[in-house]
Length: 328
Image 1 (cartoon, one colour):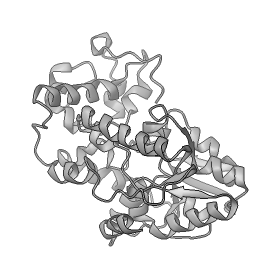
Image 2: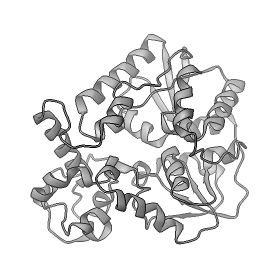
Image 3: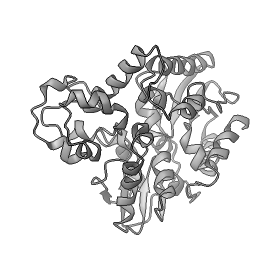
Image 4: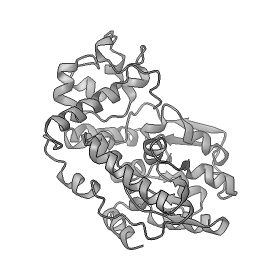
């Protein structure tokens, strides 16, 4: 979300209740974004989806306020998280276990992120191949640093960004092609190279086919719900009728809140399943994987569809798929 005109002061809250009505986390604890005392206690229970910020009539950025609480808690605790349940995430993501820069090269580089290759390994390789048929393209496997940032370890996240930037500049990369919208929004103003979405690049190179359906239901990933940039980038591949599933605030994976709120995290994707849509499309590997994992049927990733791979999320071997990227 573009927060240039957003307010980062929770004391400005007018207690209208709109954020509470729109957020299952706030509703559960009967609080709003102005209840700073309770938010201090419950900061890690928030999904950081940004729904409160989007509905606020005076533009208070609740997501950034809660993220700032997390960062201050970690800083006060000398860089350590005082909440339990995040050791495995930190071990994997802080110094990403499966990073691979062997195929970085000058010019354009594909940056699939960590979750998309985990759920859609065949599509990852197909996209890489298709790009190379049109123009020479490298590939890098790494975590963008957003999960580490979102649990409050901002200093470590900055180190991750600096590392990625160093590798890119050293290899004379000029363009990073993002497959993940989370990576795109997190890194686009932090790297010293041009950052583009995969759909911009496919359109530029004339790769991919338009979906044949008359109408599709799209579950948007959280970072694209405010700006909708990726929807614009992929417009040429979509049918005229697009139904955005805006009544569900998150796929359940946002903000690493599932550690603290497992029932809410399970309930979010289940609420989509209950609507019994024939098909659901998404353009986020995390959303696609989790919606499938929680019992959703006919969940399609738009990139897998327009490239013709037709790959469904591989939820059984997701960790193995991620590990394999280290040796590609």
